[in-house]
Length: 249
Image (cartoon, rainbow, N blue to C red; front, side):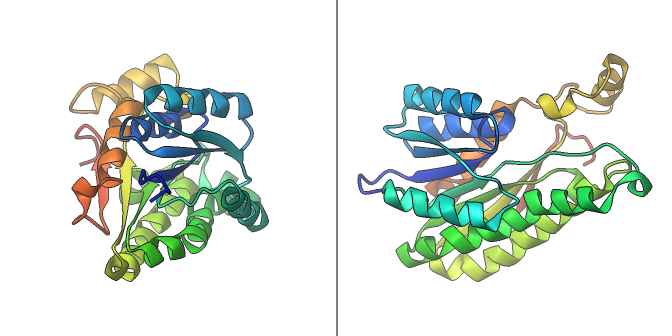
């Protein structure tokens, strides 16, 4: 916990979409927020301001390139100077590519794994030891339904998320004895910029396949993340929880 007893939450990719919704929701629970961004400083600062209005006593925007181990080490050092030691880490940052595997260049494959999976490894190594030492912590990864069932046209993304799911389960077993839980949320179609490449007809066809008949809202994903990040979920670990509206179930 922070010196004032509130949780300190680091949310990656919190400049927009699901990450911003997660940060705002954790703020409602009284957490201090570390709002990570890669390039959208203005949007990250807007998220930080929204967190202060929602209930955080402290919310700060910080930049780091998740593809760089050096950047993340520098981020940790910067947070220590600011007196911020996160005991909640929510890894929301990510992107996808819509293309066949034969059209996916190797550097694109590597970048997807860097951002989705290797950065999760780096975050756990950097911030997990303090959680273990203090006998309390929460790590939540944003996965995808494609990491559970696979996806034609998004094979690289699905593989990275599938790896993240296995990483979640293994890390949960390692950290359980220290009072740290590790879980993942695997949404289906969420109404964010990631779906912006879909045309109107594609959106209608996709919605028709979802039993609940609509896309998820970022705030609905945030509710599940906030639950997993709280004491209410103290006996839940090593789980990949699908949030799909019945789609791909």
